[in-house]
Length: 427
Ligand code: GDP
Ligand code: IMO
Ligand code: MG
Image 1 (tube, rainbow, N blue to C red):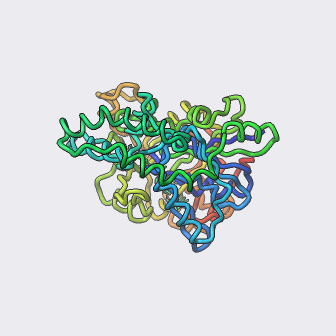
Image 2 (cartoon, rainbow, N blue to C red; image 1 turned 120 degrees about the horizontal axis):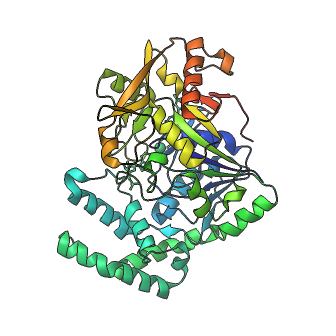
Image 3 (cartoon, helix red, strand yellow; image 1 turned 180 degrees about the vertical axis):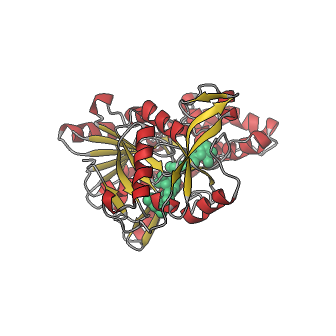
């Protein structure tokens, strides 16, 4: 019963879409377990490029059943437009399964997300504005709308009423906005219900039965470890658990079923939105990483903040996720630097610190301690095996592996499926 979790080991955008797609041909199910359409996962197949937000990247592999688990938040309008966009490009989406327990991102959740950010001013999180935080807040406050509620008009109306009761007070009295009408929201949501119905299923049962039948299930994380609501750089995080445990709660599969946890790790670091980032660069090296790496957000089009590799963070990701492997991506982007600095520890108030500090204030003050590793200038995008890499690129990978605490089992040398060096098989 191989069940693999594939997740971001940094602040998101590590290349999870590509890695998932690479394995998609050999797995039976690909499951999103948290987050929503705040994600932007790029998959390049031949000369075709796909940007997936809500749908699991496995949807592009014909033999694979894509699943949206109970832990995901679903914006029905985004779901339907993503499906029709793929259908227009000839992708068969009929196998998709959506948990009836997944929560629905309603139009008022999107409004609240945007208004809250505006009112936070300088202290804003820099969210994607997709309603993610407010939808999870409603879930925890027990005033959320679930996918199954779309099929009972009376229940749906009562729930929307309950949710808007307080929100309309806040919107009108605090934020000076117009109140949102219950019947308009209900009408809009009911308008999506029939189109979504064929996909709604008891995904917990389906996945557990699949595992009993020795099917291969891959859990595809959105966001990344440092954006986790519990283990990330709170409050500059998303509102779900991208870390490995999130796969169990977000899909209804017990931890004893998980056989492998793969951390997707960029050969340098990026971050979108606000929050601490010790190795962030503000010079021409940062600009070059952004340009060569194409570091622009898939969801919001914002420029990504760029910096050198941070081994402290990688070690932390190994620990909180129990990583068994790393998939190192975008090594090709580092070609051409004479020396590549790697952050091996932090200096906080004059003291060397080897592990991520638990205190937010300490992390805000952390200065990177760098070790310079020798670079390479040869093109590596055609490399098929580890030995094809120039000596210095091999040493860079080995150094990162040693510092990060788990074996690097694959290396990305380009965005395409075949631009990958496989070292240890994942299946
Ligand atoms: P995700 O959110 O983790 O799926 O990552 P994104 O899709 O947001 O960002 C990763 C970007 O890097 C995408 O444009 C990918 O096509 C690209 N990419 C993934 N792996 C590699 C790689 O090994 N080399 C290069 N040059 N690009 C890659
Ligand atoms: P993928 O899956 C990078 C960031 C936002 C913001 C914070 C909270 O493509 O790696 P939210 O809208 O979730 O409430 O925003 O999290 N963020 C991401 N950053 N990659 C992502 O997804 C992200 N999803 C959310 O920029 O800082
Ligand atoms: Mg992304």
